[in-house]
Amino acid sequence: MSRLSVFALAQPAQPWKTLTHAEDIATTLAEAGVTLLHLPDTAAWRRARQANDDWLEAVRQLEGVQALLAALPALQLLSCGPHQPLSEGCRERLGMPQRFVGAEARLVLEGSCLLSLVCQEQVWQLWLDAGEGLSLPAGTLHWMQVDCQHDTHVLRLSALAGDWQGQEELALCEVARLMADEALL
Image: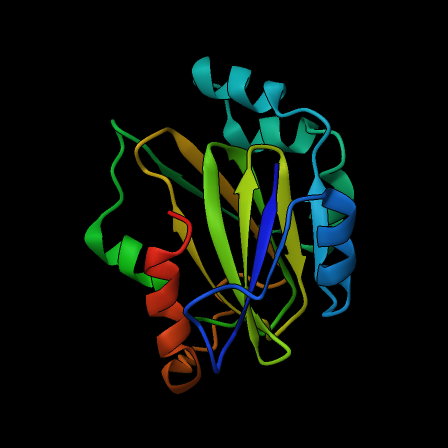
């Protein structure tokens, strides 16, 4: 189940709001144009991965993904776990604040991750479990941390392949990023 913690950029030591009910989280995210996504069942994905079938075809078969794929056709799969560690460079890039030119979505197919966003002069940290995700409007400043102690697979759907602008707004997010390293993981 998702958990959303909201931190003020001016006072990042403690969240001023923590939400655990899906309706409250969805309403809060919607205020910034972010959509909370739920996949009804990721069992098809797990079966395909375990059978070494085509992961892309398994994603296409997931209920609720077809509409996202129509709007966000560029796909990337991030996989890590005890037998598939992330490289240090990949882990660093994930943890760096970034924004994309086009809209994007992140779906957790297996495992969990912490996705942090800067919205309305606040840092929103959302813990996502398998079957959950976010749809982000273009230009949303965000970063992600994944749980590599367990098998974790996160699908990134975007409007454009290679759409990263390369803008790292560390002045705005340095405190928030350091806070994220300690907060929920």
